[in-house]
Image 1 (cartoon, helix red, strand yellow):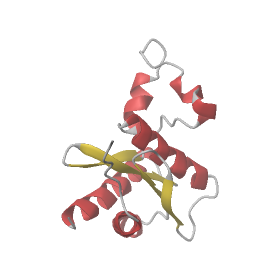
Image 2 (cartoon, one colour):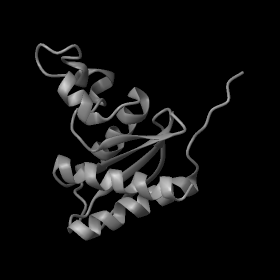
Image 3 (cartoon, one colour):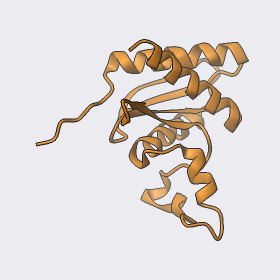
Length: 140
């Protein structure tokens, strides 16, 4: 039997709150997705002004970060021609994201979920995702 640690809905709200606050601070409305450890959506927020195309991108970033247990940015590096994961972004119907902005949420060395953010630049998306994680970890 397995014991699985995963984010709760309340945890997801804390992550979204931290990411939203950073989004407001930098002036870029974001789409924010939170998944459990298996990449299944727990909560989602599209801020007023968040890009319509970013709704799916944010969810896929969180899906990738949770399932792969790594940042989407790291897949971007590993998926370049000549690299070990070249072409991985075409797997799973194209759901694997290779653009920065998806981060796993790690508690006590274990991935318990992920956050995916989209609408800004890759650096802005990552900054907001990290702010969400920082808020969550400080609440533990």
